[in-house]
Image (tube, rainbow, N blue to C red; front, side, top):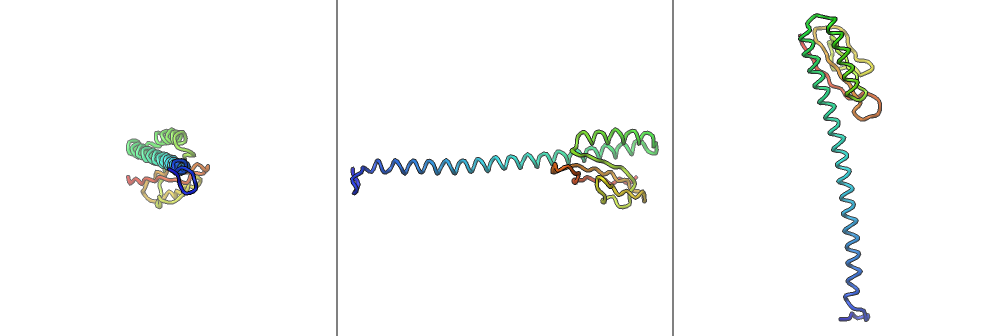
Length: 145
């Protein structure tokens, strides 16, 4: 069968099929690129959740230690040193402070803002959540003796 210009219609279909395949491959590659980007974002959020979970576990651990040690300051000091070392090892740019604080929700890693007033123990942890070198993420647990 020939078209009006003298070429067969089969030859005209071959070029259109090749273009369709190229368009389909382009769309598929864009979709796979988007899928890869979503996987990377998921991994970033998962890492953030892991750090938040670790911070919560460390805060609960210190709260139990404070209850257990009571007023034994020597035992508390030794436990604090080991606890801070564990936090530095397991959280990026990890910092921690345990103090008596009337306003426990304030402060930063380099300035924990513990005023020593009141009867509230504040367990404050900070870490680098976006890997820029500064500890901006915080987990604060308030403990009332």
